[in-house]
Image (cartoon, rainbow, N blue to C red):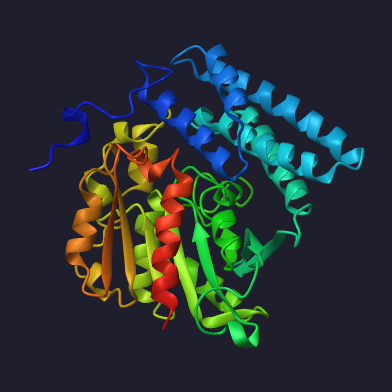
Length: 379
């Protein structure tokens, strides 16, 4: 039997924050986004070296200082007509602002949260307008309000059928418990668009979505269905080739949606989660109260058990990270319960991809993931 990751010697020992797994993982997460323009190695290392391990205020202050500096420089570049330099700096600043407020959610009224979040969104929106074609901010009708997100038009004809008449395959994607739609640029959207896919990234209900205040909910099919409706009606979208991708907790949510939204051509869970009832309060990064976690993660609600996984009918890819301490063993459980066409894709620590959601190996991971999707949509 393969041992859980805590019982083995990791192939990716902490380079920084050796005694603090939370700080080390989040540093890897922000550094990993360098693969698609969300960080620069020297900036990340210089910032991390100034942070006091375990000190959430120090984490916030240093990442905020870096974000502010990069944002100012990027603004100056844009104003001087240097669009590429400005765009690149704004992308990095957006990610650094996101990182700054990450550990503050134990005190939801902390004004620093909204400030950093709003700056992160503003920087990303400015950068989005500087792409060619631009990344378009969108609002998708949802209940009494709207879901905020972005639409990327794929470059080139795209894989599979539909290319001859101008229709491209489309990936609908969302983050998990603690990540906004802006981060999805680095966690799959940019990689998909450069391969010829349209992308719809969006913020669903949940605690990381500051501007809407919609609570997390388990019936994710009722969130995804309006997004699929919107995407299918969009010019240039092939309605028969819409895939769904979820990251982190989104791996569970995407699978849950696919069980009931049968227009999906494929489902991708990065990574697979079968039952959140086995996840304890201490498994989540950052200071969170016990009652908060209990409200968000009720075992009876957030599970693919009771025949839910078996209802998924589209081809489904379940990813697994060798050192994922949060969701160890869950991807295999999802895979074992699937009755559709299924693939379990394992990522190892030896190849640098063993962390939760393969942070730090985005080029490798999304290369394999989208190769699978290319082949799946060649129908």
